[in-house]
Length: 561
Image 1 (cartoon, rainbow, N blue to C red):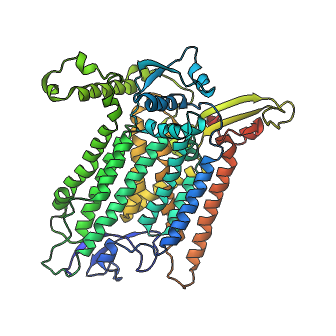
Image 2 (image 1 turned 90 degrees about the horizontal axis):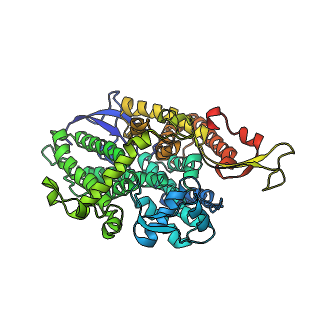
Image 3 (image 1 turned 135 degrees about the vertical axis):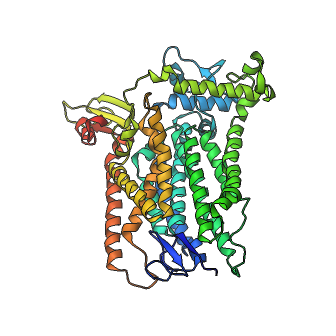
């Protein structure tokens, strides 16, 4: 092997050990700066995966099943439209029935909701409706309505399903990142018992689908990192000083799949664009790091052209094509909102080369953008509006539904005479998880920047791109439940930091070290406390009837009420 001096990302502690943390070391003739012998470069580029294939899947599916039981239990209750379900569930059914969104009857107020709950689904007008989000999430809700009917279980089925699948993805992604089934399962369990993710998995809003597609795309990018580095590592076999370094990998299937997932995320909500940009930069850094670790000459230039341009096509252009394809229903229906814009407004200049259907679609997007940024929305107010600066510490959660003043002896109210009950659905993150997660994200930033451990870059980039852009829109009502996309990256950061606390695993048949025993106790205690915290707030996440004092005992701050 040629002599190289390069900063590399250490993907394994020692050959044969499961990895719960990582470090950056400098290689010079196979030794780090302290003179310790390093594993071979090939093994550092692509550390072996855990050998517990069957056990890993059994653990994964067990935790996923737990998440499913939590999310599907009593899913159809309350039997009514909760919060913005009144828009998305009906828009989804309109897409299912007509192929495009139609307006529904709204006089007297709430009449359409009442009729649907009574089984009368004839609530739509002949006029098209401007919907202010793309259609992917609503088509996903519509799939549940097709399977189970236009009822509360039907429109909540797909959110519960994809919320559950997000848990599975997080487990497998963290397992791949750490080469540790244990740490992957810790991440999945934490996500399964987060209150905000739980609630958003049980209501027919769009954000749980956005979270799923973002996590799916990032999972594909992590898999691509492995796929690529494995092939680079294979290229080292038989290499001499003049041998070819690395491979030209122009077609990378995992990145194409990531582009599709990013396109579907964008087709759910436009806020996914910031995540695409953030991870586009991160994957370039990964490619550059791999080529530099191989000792390639002009690694930056090679990464820019050999890796960067194909990555732009695979991720960004594929995402754009996928996003455009999600508007097929709108493009095929002449009666859709603003579909006739081009026919009524002749094109000028360069727009003459754009087909009329797509020119109308561009105009539709301009109207949606005006809605989200115009004076109407800026001047609007909402009692549950929440500034994004407070999201990491749950400064202002949101109530999705509430029934107050339930009298003792009615509706399962067991309050003593003189005290009423209430039932609520509060989109509240599990406090212990969120507060520890905020600290873990700070630690993750230190590990990423200070030790150049690539793993910690994933939750940092994911969290920041899902959070920081909302500060630009703090002059309009925005809500805490938007932060559900941040939750998977929070639990990934927590799991990685807990892996540091846990310490490296020992080889088979070797006794655990005191460090490992203490670390196991700390990690186990933390996970148990998070589960207990989730169980404590369970009633206010699930519309349970509670005496007023019991509800207040779960409202730890005035801003939560």
